[in-house]
Image (cartoon, rainbow, N blue to C red; front, side):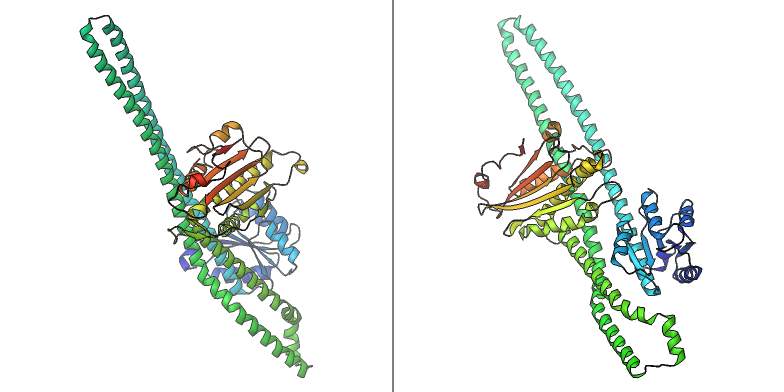
Length: 513
């Protein structure tokens, strides 16, 4: 992180030990950060009423309100829930770490603190927070653009309505003229026929305008969603690329670091074996640094760092698999890889929070061959369907009282090969289901049941068009209090044959009761 960025970042240190506060304050201030300090949880919460930091270093063990309780309080407030929290603790038990991460902390730093480690972790999480902010700003701009286009669509609707009124008025005039012409002599019959032809032309023009408007609406929805997903895919791929190199560097050097540590520990044991009674100064220094603890904890620390680096590499690979910005052509792909990448990206939404219970994902994967498709577009369909299922389960979870009587929220993903020609991907949830009105309008552009600002009504419409582009079918099975299931059926090979005639009976309908 360059000097310009660190000067704009504020870090709050919460520790009841003045020595630790002083050391961390000096180090981080010298590194270019603006630093605030608090000696207990209550003091930290009070300071947050006046200034919001970009990151919080929080000691776990403190008198009064400990670090866990302080973190729980911060994540419960709307103004502080998104601030990254890194715990500082000498506790090495896994249960303590899991507890802190479940409360919303993003990382752990084990005492005694190493300045380089502190700076590295602080820089990583500040970078992630800044990237998240930029992504949110970009999404806001996209929403504003969608609103502008919706306004343009409304204006077009008004113009169409005005034209229809004019057509109706003109038709009424022609009908009145026809009644008068019937009373006139036979010579006026030809004029009456000419007027009738004119009326038909007006009606044909009105029909053509309606068809053109529908085509414009579909094209508009495709452009909006395509631009949104293209920008999101490029951003995701860029983030994955930027993080990939430093993570590979860290991961590659962890093996050497572990070997060096083992060699040093072995050499230290040899010293202890051959010099059982070292000089007093060495004995005092060993006690001061808690040598026995360091010997036991160093391999664990390196192992934990390796696990963390592997996890980051998995996430990066999943992001790249999901974006697939470099794969614009249709090619054989593994459908299960796309589903797993989507689930990994949405993993944070599947976990329990203060607003909803955890969502269980059940995967019933069949033995599928590679499927010819546009992988990035098909991943977009999976993202829309699974994200909608999560939204429905969260909303249903809020409505269930008492909590202990409701079923466990779950999403079922089932894949099946059909007659060696097609594959079926079913995504089902046990939410409140849909009413008949919602079910009938499900795939219409701009139709949404979500609040204003949360949904554009484009996701399912675009998903339906993507599946159709793959010569496939999408159907929905739902009823009130019966959950919802979306079934996608696409051919294994994309050929110019009449594939529709090969689709098994019962899969041609778009909707199912």
